[in-house]
Image (cartoon, rainbow, N blue to C red):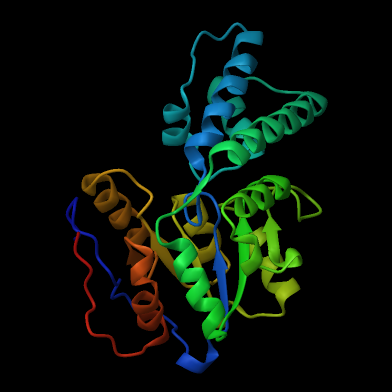
Amino acid sequence: MAKVGDIPAFNPRPTTNTPLSQITQLLFDCDNTLVMSEELAFEACADIANEILAKRDITDRYTGEELIKDFVGQNFRGMMVSLQAKYGFDMPKEEIEHYVKEEENQVIAKLEAKAVPCIGANEELERLQRQGKYDMAVVSSSALRRVRASIKKVNQDKYFKPDHVFSAATSLPQPTSKPDPAIYLHALEVLGKKPEESVAIEDSRSGALSAIRAGIPVIAYVGSYHGDDKRGEMAAKLTELGAQVVMKDWAEFDTCLKQIEGEPTETSVANL
């Protein structure tokens, strides 16, 4: 069993890995996987969540950090569902839609001002584009406007075709949020790919579960978490869920991908 602070690079449980030549599609989560956006987004979400609670005379208040702890990996719509369940109230559809749009506008403003790429992500995307071996897409819970604003701000939009950016909040007939696998299943259908020829890169429990439930092998990225203990904790949790490989730095991506593909690598263990 992994100890806090020790990040297992490979989960030895049996998998249905395909031969190297059959992995053709890379599916990247956006928030805190490609772009350091969660903290900025949750700052805006906290203000809106507190307004909603205050309107109902509920005295609890959230900080952005507390929202991340409770709702990381969910989009704002999913967060509102969870908030209603936690505090036992119902929001009319019109009110939900109002706050969804307001949250989107506030978050985009923060992202356009302050978003930065996850360390090493741009360099790895550039290498993958030059290599030309894999098709690449973004699969996010967040609203499509927000995802596109994020990747544009950090100069990642050039690596993804516009119609290869998918949003659980926007791209589906019925909006949803990870861990629902619907957005991954939708992306596979649009891209014309099978789960076994794809690999997802996810940083959260909700995101990893979404991909796993769609039958897609997962590389769990923990490099966006602060501190060795937290990275170790998340590595253990995501491995327990079924992620095959844990990656602590984007420089390890090629090695992690080869492990899923079944290629020999120089090392099978990444240590902090």
